[in-house]
Length: 145
Length: 249
Image 1 (cartoon, chains in turn red, yellow):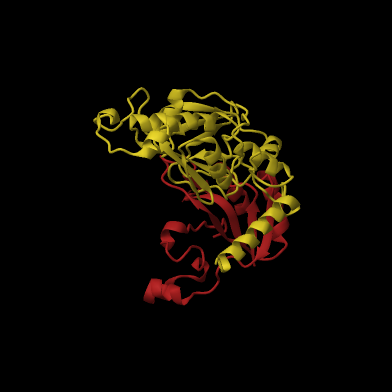
Image 2 (image 1 turned 135 degrees about the vertical axis):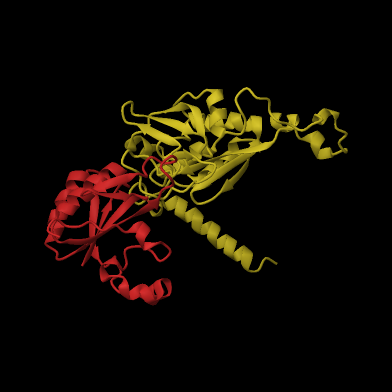
């Protein structure tokens, strides 16, 4: 199942970095998508920078407006809520729903062609059709792996 | 007495205040003439106004009764260029809102041309008059450093949530909030070119003050539907326009 964290303010790169690092500690989160306004290069807008999540460098290309999470079950939501309360003192909402596409589509077939079969199910739905998957998605390995 | 806007709510009252040229709006900050010119970015401070050449007096213009009747603006008399200032107003209780700006500009500023879009509003007039009007717009209640943006381009942001400092989203970050002083500084001009020196725009207004001053109807502020008088006039205009447009003869 998916949930969406909807902060009442748009988040700075610092807050995003702290939030993602803490969320990464929670067991039961499978995938995360950050959605927001795209930002120009760093010399125009200092909010665009490289953030570090669990040692993995991520080019934060947006100013975070929502964080969408795919979770294993509803029990995880309470942990996520606690973390959000620590970082999002200006208020937030958590919505339950389906926010990440789960199936490969005809558009994917047109975009990737024969190599669609090689794309794992985990990578489906993480970015919009017009973007290069490699530019937008980062794989963060868990400790045990 | 001129009727500027219907309604009994505080928002309606504020709209009438902005629109009525007899009301003097409160001055909230001081911005030097030089800084206004820098923020506009149309010419360098101290530079002469680029105007028509040869000067208008030396030109042999055709006789025109209207030209004799209408007293020209200072800028028109000098043959200045037409230049602009454009504002983006946040939906989060910014003091002025685009349609209100247009109404009020036409009542207050002679010779000014106003263009309205959903989130931004442009004022066009002769350069030296524009600088005079811009100074008034930036120094008085028209402007709040956090919720109003001076944006000649890349205007997006009026309908977005505010950022953590309470500033409206601006992709080019022209106005920057200084956490140490609590003030907002303009670091770029309206089209996003770096300024040599940042311009102090003062402190953002408190939320409660903004809710008192705002001209936007919002459900979490004053809802439009609760202003019975304004709704009644709107209905009347709607019916008359429909009937008039249906079969004019």
